[in-house]
Image (cartoon, rainbow over all chains, first blue to last red):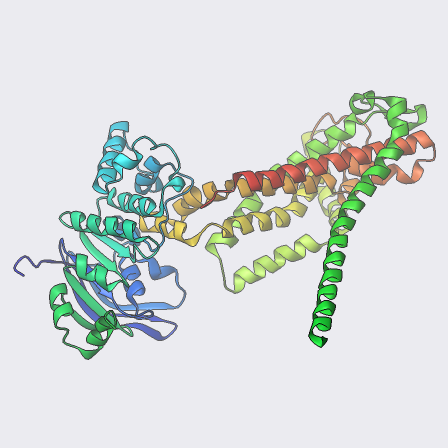
Length: 254
Length: 299
């Protein structure tokens, strides 16, 4: 508990869509190099919350956000959205590698999209490094210039993680990253999350309680847009303070 | 017993229904074959008399029984390519604007309804507009350049043709752009891409085959457009020497000379032109469809 250092902190964060309040007065620090799992029943605002951190909600008409999201003592909501997204990577529910790009270009997509010119050597380092970090290197090193669409779902998802990591983000957001994958691929992603947290802070939304228990250090329980409980994962699973949390967690036994 | 009877009745009804559906499918094929056979049999005389030189002779002089389709082939291609070139930037911009920047809202509805209305205007109206508004302008322009001020000609018909195909190709490209999965756009956004970068590096590469097929289909439409072109192209049966030259396309010469064709060979030669037009448009339509099937990205 001594190494608690918050990297991102939500303060009185509210989010409304067309006057309907989706998130209510969220106060939530995320700790550096920890895995924080966000749980809660469908429609509780988990995905909305994680997408606001990447500023991906801003295309929604009639959206209003109040409060603060402090990233290194700067309000993320006041920053340029594009800068925020370069610092904070995101991986989505369904693996979404770019089908028009090769595997190598997918890893480099962040640079290609932003028009950053890289030397051949830089490219090689980034591609090799990111693919090694995600354990994909040995599986795809002979096919780097083929399109990524022939990969299995789990490999595609790891390619998407590699693509996010290539940008050297401070924070990696995972929005139910294994919900479209089989158990074996899920296990691989979970191992990967464990390996990655020494370098990057991970915030993940998950429906899978077992997954939250296995790989997260902290767990947030959201219910109807309110933060009900936020604790170390071991504590929240052993002795939830709130009855709502307990009811939700015990469903896995019932 | 009663049960079996009603099932038999229902089944026979379903059977008849299926037969009717199938017949309507066969009917479409029969119509296409019928058109082709009619054209081919009526064109036979001209192809017998003129032979293959019909396709490369550059004189079309019905009085001397000299029939060459080459000027019309060139006229058609030049007019259509020019029209397509003029229309592309506009239809492209419209498609991206409507498909990506202005997906919903009142302005979006107004613009798309306007496009639909534009696509529905009869081509004779475009032709009139061209004759009374565009042609005088072009004539002034030609005077300024010091060339013969025909007014009518390839350039005028290409501009009007471009106006006519913008709504058509914009709506095809827009549909293709709308097919680009939302999660790919979000993936690009989450990597820090601006909207412009999302469009140029994710959407267009993904949609390019569909857009290309849409261009081919618009080209097919430009080739077969008849009324407006007939009114504006100047109806000169020779190979055009400049972009301002009066010329004729396959479709416009057909519309223009059909009523005069009293001799069998003249009529048959016109029908050969029709057969050519039939094949050219069919090829573009087939190739367009083939590209969509072959090259669509499987996500």
